Structures are given as C-alpha cells and as structure tokens.
Length: 144
Image (cartoon, rainbow, N blue to C red; front, side, top):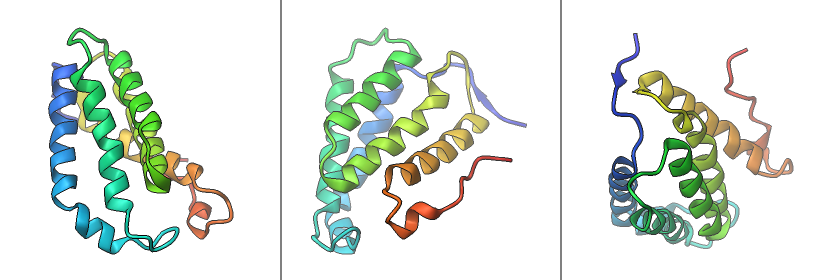
C-alpha cells in the first residue's frame, strides 16, 4: 500500500528539496569530477552537474509560491534544460524532465509516484544518449 503525502507538490517543497540536493552535490563535486570517465575523462562532470542544478535552484527562488504542480514541473524542467552544462548536464536535464512527469498531476504524492518518477527518469536518460553509445541499448524499465 502506498503512503500518501496529502499536501502534494508546492514551490516551497520543490525549493527546499532541490536546494538540499544542490548542497549535497556541491559538497561532493570534486569527487564526481575525479570519477568522470564518460564520454571523455575531462574531470568536469561534477562542476557541470552543479551548474545545471544551480540553474534550477535559481529558477525556484524566483518563482511565485502559488504555482500549480504542472507549472512547477515546467519551470524546473525548463531551468534544467536551459541551464544544462556539458553532456552530463544535458543528460541530467532529460532525467529531470522524465522524473517530473508524474509529479505534474494535482493530488497527493505517494511512494508509487516516486517509483514511477525514477522509472521515467531512467528511460528518458537512456533515450537522450545517442544510439552509438553502448549504454543506450538498455531495455526500457517500463512494465510490460
């Protein structure tokens, strides 16, 4: 049985969640830079991811508190895409776009919403990577 959060998605919640993620990512930026191997080991993936997420934080800080869930998701997806830096930022922006689809609906947030969001993020990320990449041949995680 899914547990529900009756409050649903709000700008205040989105701001605090994205900001917490940004702070955690920023704290480990160099570690991510050091792990960087795809598509080339240029050592900037952590920096590019931080810059991309920072764009989302800035968009949410400037957003009015009365946006609908669909408007919040649109603002986040747009900020991620427009603020994407490097290949990793573009792939992250596509993951964000996919993950937000289930959150755009009005109503309570459930554990099922999160599971669906993770599946859509994964599927969208794999579709964003060109077919010449071995990772893009991964089968869809969508239920059959």
